[in-house]
Image 1 (cartoon, rainbow, N blue to C red):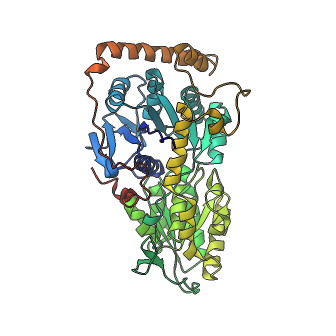
Image 2 (image 1 turned 90 degrees about the vertical axis):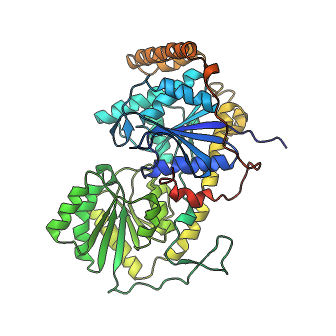
Length: 492
């Protein structure tokens, strides 16, 4: 049996720990599982406060914190070329073969992919977001995405809806985009009624008997954990909470998160005198999410746009019944018996939440089985295995027929991108009448800058970093890294 090939991969994004979030957790968990499979993975992101230079996280995940200026929502100021010397130095020091960028709005991600192609490295892009097509911000973002993805080797989206959106925004060949969903560490999101028991199974936990239906006088807690921004439906939440509490007296809200719209929630609480029924916890760390969720019965997710929605999987794993808006890729995430869907409208959110409260009181929803079901559906090991297959496909380790599932000989030829400058310029030139010429100019300058760096600071003068010592086994079945993931944001 042929030995499986391993790769040296650089994950690049503006979004990483200690900032909490779905993209941040995705990058860390995927990197950890790829390391467990024998690959070498480093992470490149910008500096966070005093977190600069090189840091090591659990499982030997090496993080480069580049001191770049942050302008908005932890995104660095786009400079196009100033990142190249630092990026080239890191890639040579770490002997990088594949650059894997994350996030449509991440400047570091886009610049890294551009420079990686100039250096002759394979590239992969993962999109975690949905964008529109009409407003000015979306038009500019889509044009930038088209520029970067014109020459990327392969793209990954976290849901089928996200794939459709990305294909349209960047005018991509659908064959060049794979769907690999997010996942969670199920052991870190156990329900409240899971307790350690010597008689338990292999996971060390044993569920208690099913909970009884809630009586009419018992308090139901609705949990909301989200960044308090407009696109997360904070305005919708602000309008719906007073109505929900008025219609259902023995109900309260627990809200965790921060953002510019937090002031609207605070004003709503003051205006309606709801201090005893709505508790705002402010920002919480990733390791505190499970503790907050297990204090509730229902999780409300009123987002206006969402590519996947990892937090609703975490909520279901904690044994909460989920009420969420039917937008983006959310309908793909959980089966219907775990969720109640609502239109992104105030009246429908109120009605759906009321329906969920009634179902919980009547004992119609058996949430005690949610955790085991979610554990079987989502696994980071599976995500790493599928991502590794993408790496195999773009490097030619497996044939294109094996990668795409059929013979593509008569389907516009090979899908493996050529590194020659003339072929790259041809791909960029087709991005638009004026934009194409601008993109070609940018790529040409980037190539000349690369030649200058090769002359000014030869790669022979750059020291190669020793690899983190690993066990001989390339496939470590279940690693303790999952249990340690919740501490990654605080471990330096």
